[in-house]
Image 1 (tube, rainbow, N blue to C red):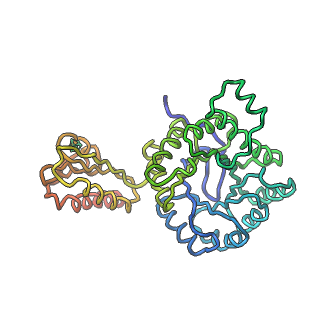
Image 2 (cartoon, rainbow, N blue to C red):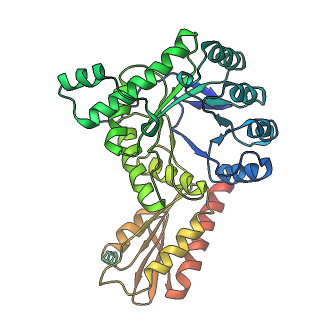
Image 3 (spheres, rainbow, N blue to C red):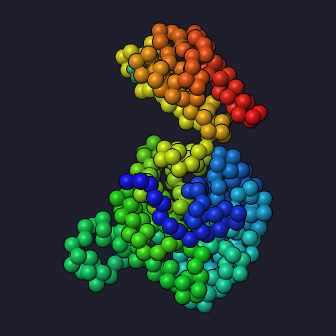
Length: 368
Ligand code: SF4
């Protein structure tokens, strides 16, 4: 099936467009204490450097809300204030100039308080993301459970539909106030639930969808869960912005997000490393070579494909297909550039030789 992106309305977060014909936007969230503007800004800069396009900060109290006035004007990328329950925090965040709110209006008790926040967001052209998480769903009603049982719904479908209806109840509050600058997320740790929820929501309206697998976990397991959940939906054309949640430095989240997007051919950023897993044929220390090149490539922002292959069986094919590559063999390496052999080097010269060739290609591109 040809890739066809779901049509969504464009929503602007500062100068970044989500939905419409915009590329899939990469987001992350700071892990610093928002009440410490310097530490938070340092992390925002680190995130922006690796390609984060929108950053979310938690706003748990008044001091954090006050710190936004210091953070937002100095942030290189649009800032989203993550707020729960307290409408006064949302008002303060809007006054500080945040570019988006993550807020579930149904969790604010008084309708007049919701109206006040929505009015102010509208005046300032600030969108609102309704973020429903599996972990904080309201209880299901007996009627709803019976209705789904009568339809023969599975447990996954039951929870997914509950998430969708919960999100729609928040959407309705905003729509009734004539507010349509909405982004929706439906995150769950269970990937089949999350996929089902987004698929259902995608059929119901044209609001852009923010994809994520919540509490995905430590870097390895979390990256896999996120790649499967987010990747499956993106491949179906569903999703306009993504956030990978990992229990580690958020810079890693941005790397994983771009790997997902690059794997699907949806964004280009930085280098792509092709490396063989090695096998009994390998005759160099390929793990070391690949890791050293991987580390170096993290500093490269332009798209470039580099292959590090262990032997002459598959090596030359992949190496030739890349911008730069090495096919190693018995303590030596054949270096390819744009499909042509450019030199043969000793094992200890492989990494410097690859770096030189990469630099040369990038320099050529820049100059012409
Ligand atoms: Fe093994 Fe060579 Fe394939 Fe690497 S490229 S996995 S060393 S056969």
